[in-house]
Length: 264
Image: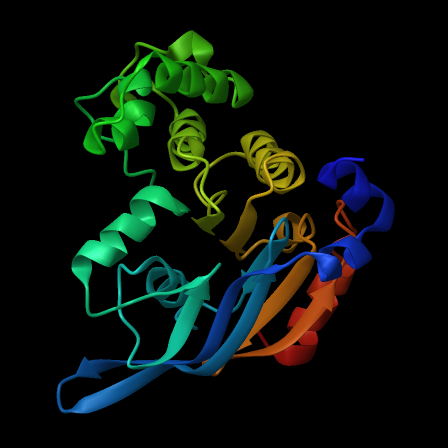
């Protein structure tokens, strides 16, 4: 029986048996504003299992993007630790943080971040080109992912020739091309229409089910958060509550209700 089949049959129980992929302990981060320190994250605790999809919800400015940036090593916390698999992120080493993003973490941003002078195919190949790992086998991987996200017909187009939804689909293919252990998605459906938003959520859902990649997604949308196995609510710098689901699309009413209850 495959992991995906087991997950489909046992839901949350299967995820609980899966090893911890991401462990965040006592994570704190402040930003300097004039002579004041503005706390954003305060002793935050979070775990994500391998094969699990977790949605983070919270008001604007609550620290969702800061959290993702600290996990990826784009930013460094003031204190606490982030452990991915068997490694604790070394924030003192820029080389180590770059290696982490290059080999172990995929990232999807709200504003796509595609290179305008590269074609769709070249943008997705970019991680292999940077790592000097480009070869026919890697090209097959690129083409397979572009087929998965429905963008093979745009292979030789440039970002300026794509819609916002198409650019986001390309950016997801690029984030997955090196088969990361963890995918971080910051408002991945924030700048696309509802139909593309549903396609994106199906791709993220399939990523956990078939590729065994953990997904941590920041979102404002209860409807899209309802695709996750677990929804965590971020308030006052920490996870204040969470809702467990069953690895399939749920009714968003519970999430709306929890947001109202928490005043988020």
